[in-house]
Length: 452
Image 1: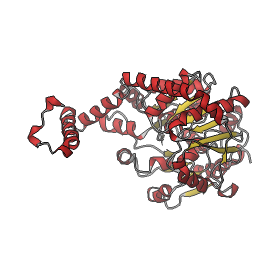
Image 2: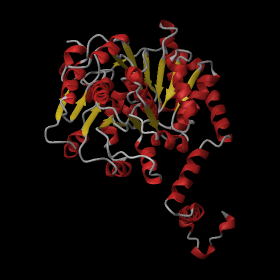
Image 3: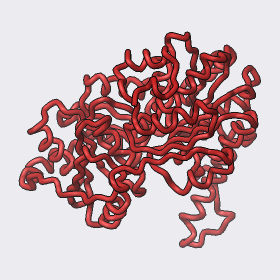
Image 4: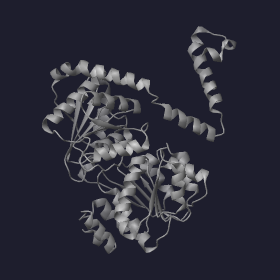
């Protein structure tokens, strides 16, 4: 089947050809005709299967028939994914003079407000920042949108964004076409049928006997002690580099602090890398992605902000420095490699305490991970160097105001809620003090703010 057979306009078919897209993927073949017919749609397919084009192409066709702004709203859980989706809309819609804007945190709200007031055709946003705009200004309206897209819908609807989504949904028209897409079909998606029409078209990839990861992905594990996990990580990288000197690597870890320390440690021992996590300024996050995508930097160390949807053309290896607690997050992480029919490898570092998590992942993906062989003797030779480098990184990080941004944002939120941040902090200090001294049976009237 070709794109022309999906009832797409000639100009869209030509744009796909210009971008090197010859044949639609299964999710595109099944969803595009239904969306063009005006049906609400829920689509689920593996990472790298072309989900973005499955909703972008029909939206742009409908826009070209009746152009106005704001025509479509696309919501996504991460900032980087928002920029990526907007770039794909721009690339395809260039010939019709498409106007789009990206509304995410970490950017100037005034500038974003001006962009929204100009009524762009496509708005791509994270829920938090868009809700902030809806609550703080009235220079734009979402009452005329034709399409609402929830990309990575399972993440958006699992509860974390409920308050923001409520604000957004109240600003939307009742009549709109709902499009929900994700790489993992969870109970969350099955529960949202009440927000879409009764005639919703649901399509889920059923190929490869229910295996949730692609066949081109080689999946391995490395068993290691918890306290020297970083040394095993370095040896995994060295072993991989012995066979692939220039291969791109993404390393996933659990927290912002661990991500930053690991990045500083690897840079110190000669593995040049960039870090991507929520405590990094937005412009630096985008710069890090550009450096990695352009192959200027070969290693990206990230939290799960990079796990969903990001389309990085060539990633040879994904390493799970910390195994994810939820199997579906593993699927999203390893989905950054072996995309669009290319081969890839995923290696997960596990401790004896992680065996149950490993089995849960294997049961979910329908395949067994095999052991990745490394030289244990080499780890002994680098153990001291890694430990010293990590300790120095921790000391350097302690000297910086690493959590300053988080504290500032917390104070801003309290002020917007009409609360006094200093008063709240004093209350928390009292609670910490009494909790600390509870065993000593310190009388309550002994509390002295100046002593804390």
